[in-house]
Length: 115
Length: 114
Image 1 (cartoon, rainbow over the protein chains, first blue to last red):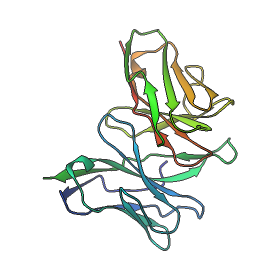
Image 2 (image 1 turned 90 degrees about the horizontal axis):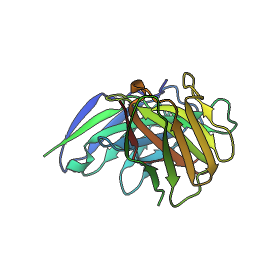
Image 3 (image 1 turned 180 degrees about the horizontal axis):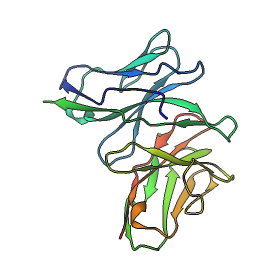
Image 4 (image 1 turned 90 degrees about the vertical axis):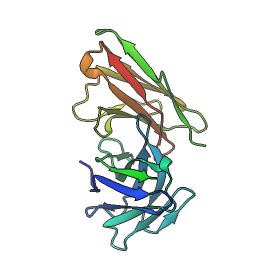
């Protein structure tokens, strides 16, 4: 089962910042938080990931709370092309393969950017 | 960078036939590749994980004799759906990573079994 919970859907106006929350209260100390998005009928696109510190790249910013039990993905200036399902995922150890990690996808947040 | 391709992008086949889907990492060496399946309006479900040169590890409930996975090189993994039936119709997506780092996903293959 996925270790994260996210809102089912969100709306945001074009040009505004989109803030997508994620709860991961059972996360372990060495487990990373990953964010991907999936535009209809395409494979997921990697956005960003982090462990403890806040992270920023050309696509987004990731804010992780000090206790690591929740995080927020920020798209600073949302465009219509940002409409997608956003997945917050805790990467977990994989049984049976030493050192291996896997992603367990939840239902994600369907983000709609409105003109 | 980090581009993963899949071929074919869609395939239609008759019930009882086998279908092979290829997954390639174009600009990096993928020590690990993953295969997922996604049914309409559902999330991605991990089917199996394969390390280059090793047998794949299948998730619980996935039939290893039906979904054959080969990861013979650092840039290519294949998924063969054997004796496909209509219930196998789905969106199959692969991902690739190098040394357990970030997974990068392919564009997916839509399979329709008639």
